[in-house]
Amino acid sequence: MLQKIDKIFEDIKSFETQRLLLIPTTKDDFEFFRTMFTNKNIMEFSRLSHKKSVVDLKTDFERILSLKERKFLFVWKVILKENNKLIGRINIGSIVRKSSRLDLGFVLLPEFWSIGIMSEAVNEIIKYLFNDINIHKITATTNNKNIRSKKLLEKFGFNLEGILKEHTYYAKQNRYIDEASYGLLKKT
Image 1 (cartoon, rainbow, N blue to C red):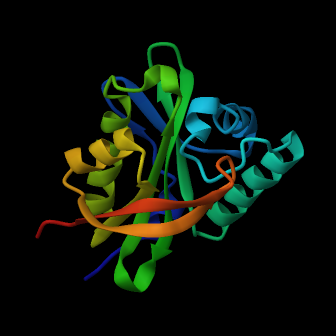
Image 2 (cartoon, rainbow, N blue to C red):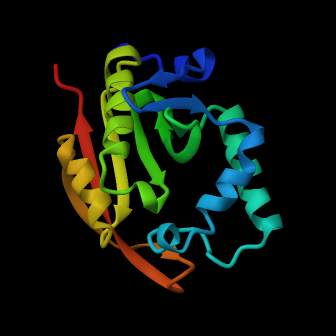
């Protein structure tokens, strides 16, 4: 199967939906990254520590930019068109080129939850990955208690492939948390 994963990093594609702009993250987006990953509601389901200093967050952000540069991670910022407000992000990572597989992740500011914003963004990225890049499989892993993320994945046909017991250390809870592993295969 021909896949063009590296095209993601070469074309630097942006998207426009009815309400959103999805634009590649740049080095100038640190303040928004800091806002997202210091938000109490977001951090409830995040693997990052909620007590990180600005210096630690800057290090995390620079690591993300480095992974993008090395073609292991790509992040789009989610912007609300009506006011040009940066409200979330959607990313792909854990890229396995030989198997044509990658992992999808997303984060949205809480005031925009449950109004279909992330569904709009995820729909656009899934179409792009399957139709333009020819990905064979998209996976996603989420905190097993994150009902909103699980419902969103299921809405797009992702199948629960298993519960990963005490799979990831969550700093906020200071313990290992079960995660739900989902997969979506390209329809042929």
